[in-house]
Image (cartoon, rainbow, N blue to C red; front, side, top):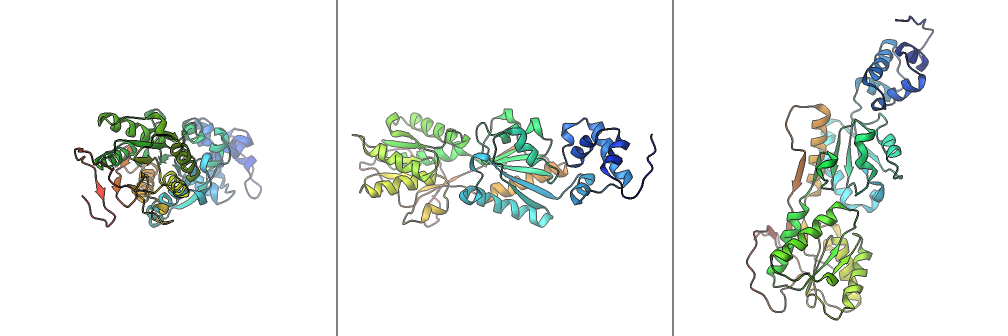
Amino acid sequence: MRLIAMRGKPTLRDVAERAGCSITTASNILQGRSHLYREDTAQRVLSAAQELGYRPNSVARSLARRRTAAIGVVLDPSHARITHNLYAHDVLDGILSYLEPRDYDIRLITPRTHDAAAVWRRIDNGSIDGAILIAPVIGSPLLEWQHYSSLPVVAVGSTLPDEYRLPQIDIDNDAAMASLVEWVIQQGHRAIGFIKGHPLHWSAHQRERAFRRVMTVRGVPLREEWILQGDYGPESGAIAALQLLRQKELPTAVIAANDEMAIGFIQQCRAMEVAVPEVLSVAGFDDTYWAQRLGLQLTTVQHDRYQIGYLAAQMLLHHIEATGEHLPSRILIPGTVVVRQTVAPAPALASVPTASASILTDGGSQR
């Protein structure tokens, strides 16, 4: 091994010379991009830095220990403004509750580009031990993690196909929507419309498939003109109401793939003097903050977003700390139909068998 005469504080050049690599390579590895290089090269650089006592900053010291005690919470670039993301707020509460007692910090990461390499350079820069991805959409650069990072990663809010090999936690969209559709049919409705979610969201497709399946199994006619495209925002719900209410024949009930679209739909109905639920019943999905505001008591599906965040943090630390405890790679949280005041019995109540759905009434009793 070549001996280096040290003069004063060791430099990055000293580390590179001892490791037998370029200064750029040494810098990248010490900044957390060791996954770009061979394992033996990365080990030589880390060993050289330790032997020489090279400590550029606190981040580098953490890298030498291979731990930063920080977790990245990453929003998909398609919806990276957390101030507009009620789902992310609730999930974040659960993440914090699990991590804070365990002395882990959180770093919120909001990529603004759809370039996968750039996104993962920002995420995997040596400042975090792992990442929780919030609702990655179809085609998201976040889903390219295997090509750009060796960080432990967990996804929430998207039930992803197995090909992505991502540990994940989400609501059971299929079962929850199926329960809601079953319950609406039990109220005698056999003319039911549907507002679809954003086409880039995995949940939108899962909820629509469940709607179509239950309608078909129950022998309830599917009217394609009553199945309208939304984007999960309230404005798209209002547009769906305009499109639907101009038709000659109307359904007696409409199910929206989320609460925001249901609320936009109801507000447009009010503007057009169509009474909800007396003329048209409306149900949502998610039981968000707005489900019981704006003069609404929305019938919807409740699911525990806090629990999703809590379990995601638990799963991620399991992977980081390699506890040896076996955890499933996918956890689906059940949903519960919450009955409030926006769905009424159909004008002529049909005789429909009772489903085994979990139902909460407005007062909180279960039936």
